[in-house]
Length: 145
Image (cartoon, rainbow, N blue to C red):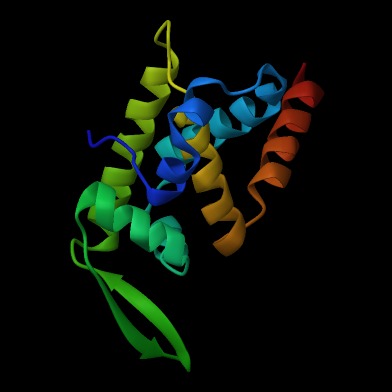
C-alpha cells in the first residue's frame, strides 16, 4: 500500500508529525471514524462525489497513480477517473483498511491522524459534513445502550 505523502505534510515537517499534541485526541477519533467510513462505505457514488475536490484528485493521482479527465455535463465540470470509480472505490477501501491496521500498531505515526483529517475535509467539502455524521453515529450508539 503506498505511503501517504503530500506537499502539505512536508511543509509542516517531521517535527510536526513526530510531536502531535496530546490535546488532539478528538482529532484522532475523527481520523479513525473517517477511515472506518471509507473502509466500509467507499463505493462508486462516494468516489464520484469526492472527485469534485481538487485535493482529493491530487491525492488519488499520487497515491493510486490514476489520471483524471474533466468533462462537461449538465452545465458543470465533472471528472472521470482512468481506472473507473468502481476500481477507485476498491483502492480507497483497501487504503483505509491498511491505515486502520497501522493505528493498531504499538507506535503509530501521527501522519495517520493527518491522513484521516485530510479525507474528513475532502468528504466534508463534497459529500456531507463528516463530523456531524460522526456525532450522529455516536448519538445512535448511546441511544441503543
